[in-house]
Image 1: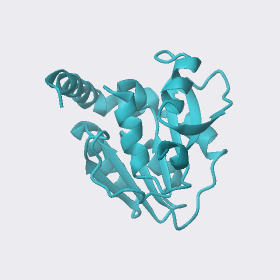
Image 2 (image 1 turned 120 degrees about the vertical axis):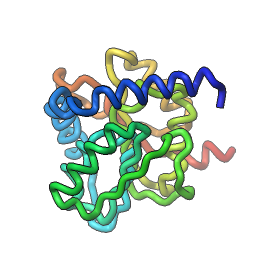
Image 3 (image 1 turned 90 degrees about the horizontal axis):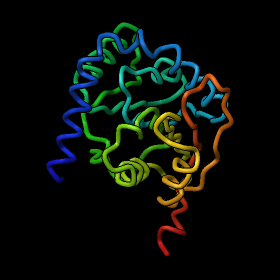
Image 4 (image 1 turned 180 degrees about the vertical axis):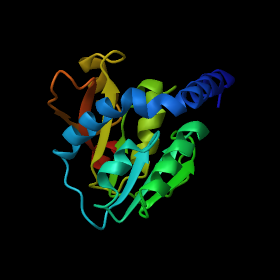
Length: 195
């Protein structure tokens, strides 16, 4: 990986490590609203194996850990993962596992997850195409993936183009103005990708 990419990633890691102790206070209300809105548009199954790519402090865990079989959270920030681990232990989230890993190089086989979430992640990506491809590599054939893009970083057109460029079939979830992201429920068109 080019050194410029790693420099940017190290900067992002430092930023989130510094922010970790106040992250929940700053973003809980905003993230909870977004997650509740997303969950009203997706069906979870008790047997689901779920990936939360860029899990941060585990906002998604608190909403779905009782509804799914296993939930794996991945993040590159040690600081955010330490806070997530405290939440997991405090709330007895037995279905949750945490892994420190780069979402551009996930330590999973292909097509293992029933649902994939990448919430508030793409705006920090150094190479969006690589991030999206790697996340979707881990999704089962018909598995939905929820990807979000911060409105202050992406125009609606740019967000849609970035996802369609990766061979995604997407449905933009309508959101109230208080939600600061574009929300996309996606699936990969593997037939189109294999042509």
